[in-house]
Image (cartoon, rainbow, N blue to C red; front, side, top):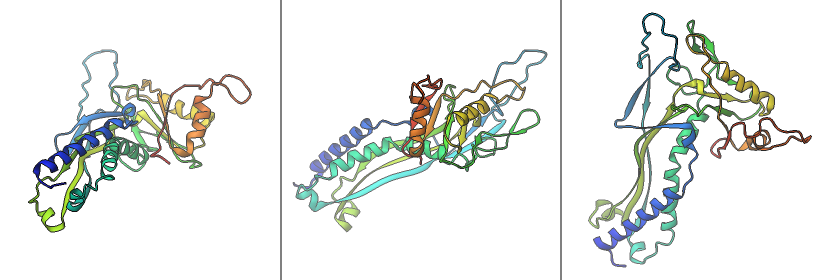
Length: 295
């Protein structure tokens, strides 16, 4: 194969097509539990209320709550994947492995949001949310007296599993998109990298970040995943109130588990009947999300 601008551009176009095919092939899991927000700068600042906005009886003057009552910043992270193709491989048309690899990049790029969302979930007990506490914590300030309130439970018996209320317009995980994954390839024979190494560089870049919205929408548990602990976690979420002491009507819609809790989750949620033959009242009680990125 002759190396010139036309052949290099054709090669770039072909690889870009494979990259996009990989993007389309991917089946991400993050969408149900995330609110996706476009970003236009390196750092975004979000304003939150201290709790959910709910209707209250109008007696006297209206009580105005400011969206800047709580501020939360999220910094975009940079991601890349780059390799070089030696010019002799192009001349010899020895490119058989590069096509599948580029398509694999596309699939991995499409899974970036999954990676960020589940990473945020997994690290929620170590990363702060809008109230300054870790997203999963035992002492979130709640109500008029800032009563310490927990959205985590368990004794560490198993890897964590998560209950999420994804029924609200604002989902538990905040996914910030600055630049979607984009494929690039150098097609200039006079490029300095080509002159020095003989390699034409190609790769993909993206910028994004993931964080948290309301901690009341999530619960982290490390107790054995069984009916008793599942019900207890649901009840803790249902018991949450706003500053006025009114129920927030939080009800989990999704159970998220990693690989070690899949069997227990399927027994609890996906089996219509129990071992003795009686009906399982928690059959399809929530949507089960099996996340291979979680332990």
